[in-house]
Image (cartoon, rainbow, N blue to C red):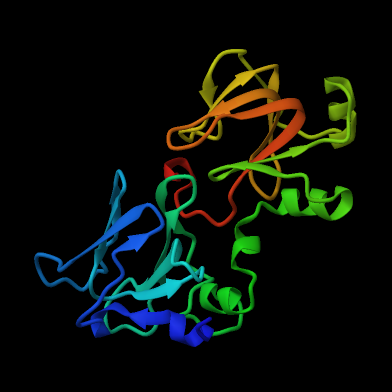
Length: 240
């Protein structure tokens, strides 16, 4: 296996071979049409991920190159600028999301950067919702996932017990029993009564039923589950 520092490359230095696939995703590199100080962003069109061939470091997250990070400065030549960080490759199908990078990016001083989290093996854990991590540490890893939606079975037998489990949490809202978006995303929930809850660590939901989403297998939840979205997404409603 390559040393981790050998798995980070500057795209502008790749004058010859560039990776062509990331799992099922086809990678196409392009030169931006005009010179700009602002960093151009990669895009995904179906199974094709379009990547600017300059301005980014390409980080190979997994040995088989099925998933990767793109990290670059928002403004070229400015060491003090924040970064843009994109996480992409293949989960069940190709995906590309921007992850929050104002305070956790390799351009900033300090130890907690996306690059250092990857080097220390903590990258994926940093994307897991904090409440899900707390439940796993107390009850074991029983988490299910559909793309950026995490689901954890609550140690309860009924809705009444679920409400007691959470205590007096403000912001409960009853949601109709027909297909509707979870957290404003492409994931659609159908099933028993679901409550959305306001948490300091982000929106969460409690429900029993099934979740459907493009590019993913249906996720069936036969017990009472808590739902939370991937942490540190820059644009949660646009995530894959």
